[in-house]
Amino acid sequence: MNSNSISFILDNEVFTIDWSKSLFPPSTTVLQFLRSIPKHTGTKEGCAEGDCGACTVVLAELAPTNDKLIYKAVDACLLFLPALHGKQLITIENLANKTPLSTELHPVQQAIVDNHASQCGYCTPGIAMSIFGLYKSEKKPERKDIIDSLAGNLCRCTGYGSIIDAAKVACKTIEQDQFSSNESKIIDALKTINESKDAIELTGKNQIYLIPFSLKQALNFRKIYPDAIIVNGSTDIAVRQNKTSEFHQQILDISFVNELKQIASQKNNFHIGAGCSLEDFKQFVHTQFFEFSPIVDHFASLQIRHVATIGGNICNASPIGDLIPMLFALNAQVKIVSSDNERIIYLEDFITGYRSINLNNNELTFEIIIPEKDNNSFYFAEKISTRRDLDISTLSIATKLKLSPQGIIEEIKLVYGGLAAKVKRAGSCEEFLIGKHFTSQNLIEASKLISNDFTPISDARSTSEYRLEVAGNLLLKCFYSIRVRMDKKIVL
Ligand SMILES: Cc1cc2nc3c(=O)[nH]c(=O)nc-3n(C[C@H](O)[C@H](O)[C@H](O)COP(=O)(O)OP(=O)(O)OC[C@H]3O[C@@H](n4cnc5c(N)ncnc54)[C@H](O)[C@@H]3O)c2cc1C
Ligand code: FES
Ligand code: FES
Image (cartoon, rainbow, N blue to C red; front, side, top):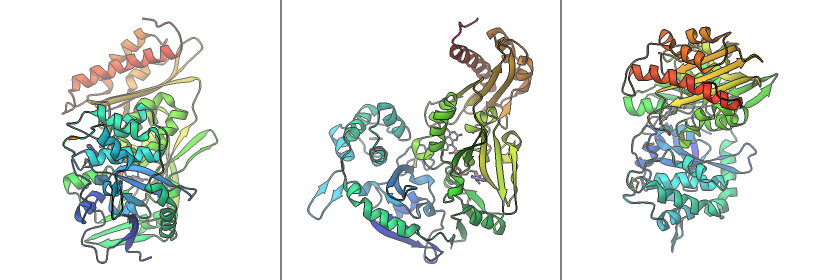
């Protein structure tokens, strides 16, 4: 393969983009690309920042076993074109089964029509693609799965009742569709594209876009191009490109490196690859640390979670990054690698300040190491945001608490997001509580100390006073939630 090109499947044909001839830079988004080619303008732009889902398309990729396809709804506005390499891009134009003589709507489209689930129609292609993604996941979805699949799609005029009804009807009996009939042909074509594991260097329009397929290739690129910005799911970088016209001359896309996507358990620790998607991490949290489900269940939208990564979340080092408080509470460490070294540091030391991390320009974040659950400890987390779904935190809390048999606090981690320039522990509160009984009175006293630990800012989301007040209330909610779990009578 020409190393200046990528190939993917569109309209059931292999589509190759060769950057020696291309008129646009590699970091053009899939949405911009679709809207620039004929007969693909069904995919709409609403916000260009992942908030509306009007641009939803579905990617089909080879399962690790190479014998079936996995379908994922994603936001085309947040995906750089090279991320399509070796995948099938399915757009709204592909759903209906068209022959020269007839057009048969896909069951998802037919259900939208039958349930009157569209009015102005602007959001409808995105909604149809999200339901199609659910349809192809073949999991006989419950109402909560339908709502989760649609949380990233904004409809301003139809009302979600009929949209949810349409999804229910469409997914009730999953039939063979033209995608199932065509699947073996697509699998063969994707296998051929994916055969070569030679790194790709796309050069065009004043930009170099690097695609390694192994950790070794990635670290080699990191050494040669220390100024290249790392991209994984691109859900943060693409927003910055779309909204601030940020342009990176060198991009290192590590999303094809399988070694970064593993989840393993070894010697009392879980090892979560930095490239693990947030949807996979969500399943991990549900099974291993269910107390943190409120965080991962309300993280962005399914379209974003399909591509966004745990590594991207911690490397962003945002004070409102949702995974950071729970990872602090779990005493997580970060393994960092370069071509000639590796080191492991605590996440609390990795995040050095507002959006700043302890990472050299020849290094990559490789994995996050989480100690196995301490069954004698209690965990709690809560996210406060203006909207329940698809919203970033105003503030959040994650805690770990260990009590003696007499109910005395032996160990406590109280971690807050959104109260300082970086995620931080409430040191004074922790110090006050150590050695004290786990009672509501002590927690109330501790909550009065939060203002010693934090001086939050007022911004568009809320005032400083609101943040402090809610931070104290969250401490009490933590108390009541844990007391309920301890199955004891609540002490007031
Ligand atoms: C609509 C929308 C909703 C969102 N909702 C939430 C939310 O609810 N909660 C939340 O916390 N965040 C949210 N985000 C922010 C973002 O999606 C997440 O932080 C996500 O985890 C970023 O991951 P990514 O792989 O897409 O990162 P990318 O955009 O690929 O990268 C982000 C940063 O991390 C660096 N990086 C990535 N991987 C590595 C690595 N392995 N080594 C070194 N550096 C690396 C990149 O250089 C970049 O600086 C939202 C974003 C959008 C657009
Ligand atoms: S255009 Fe709104 S999510 Fe992509
Ligand atoms: S049908 Fe008009 S926005 Fe959804």
